Length: 110
Image 1 (cartoon, rainbow, N blue to C red):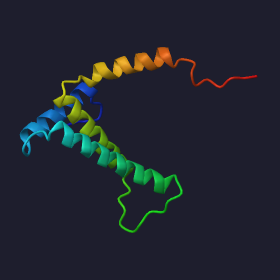
Image 2: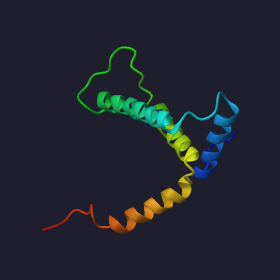
Image 3: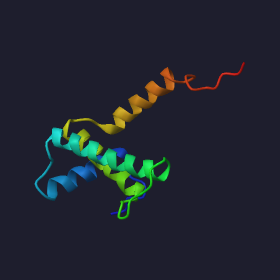
Image 4: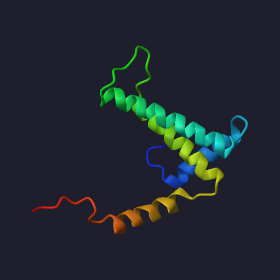
């Protein structure tokens, strides 16, 4: 499967096909929420050791891309099982940020 330029909607379909055809199907939404927290913690661990003040321990996993992909995977799984179209949700979120926050983070000159 060529995954070079997949859309968010295509990613949702890919994750759904994989989960539906491999293993026992979707975990419960609560379990997936716990997994999301766990994966986010793994991203935080790498960030703290790579860009923060902590030092990596021997054997620490350090593949930030893989951990971010894990966060994306479980986020997509949660969206799928709760009926969220992430393409539409992202478009609405981008619109909200573009209107509400259009000048919120501009540096003020005095």
